[in-house]
Length: 195
Image 1 (cartoon, rainbow, N blue to C red):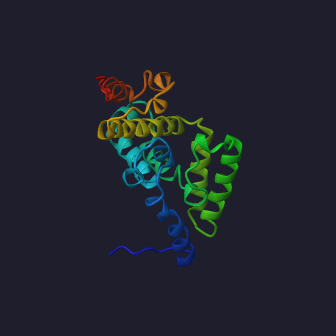
Image 2 (cartoon, rainbow, N blue to C red):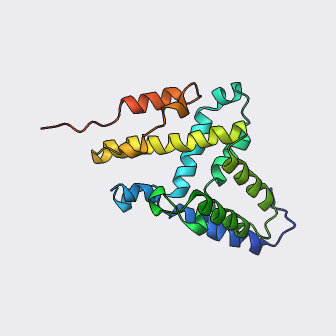
């Protein structure tokens, strides 16, 4: 039998989880702002799950490129945790990147106060935000790829175009582990038929 042995109060863990589990029901606002019915919009947690699945699907290619799969998975799972407190801030919200980053840094601190693994989570989040390590660069790219796969699916489901999500991303995927997926979904997007 496996037991959870920690040197931290269980109340601190539960307190963090209480906030983090909100991500299961926080909708990704960019889709709502683009006209996708709120009841059909993925949650922030679903987005992180999608990124994790992409890492698993691409793990052989990523390993060949020297990417640490475990670190990438961990980063994908925590990259949006601050949204449990600050919400899903989109470019349409007229909040500067600096203000968004500062608010999210405070949220990451608050989320993990008293939690033994808190420093590890904050370190991963900071690494993701800096975008300098090979793993952070992959996770940032897969953050966009997951968004585009979801856009591709919404376009088909609702027979609409979500062009703003696709703008200026070709270079991001060029010669990457996910270039073939990107090229396929981009070339097979839903086309609105004229009368």
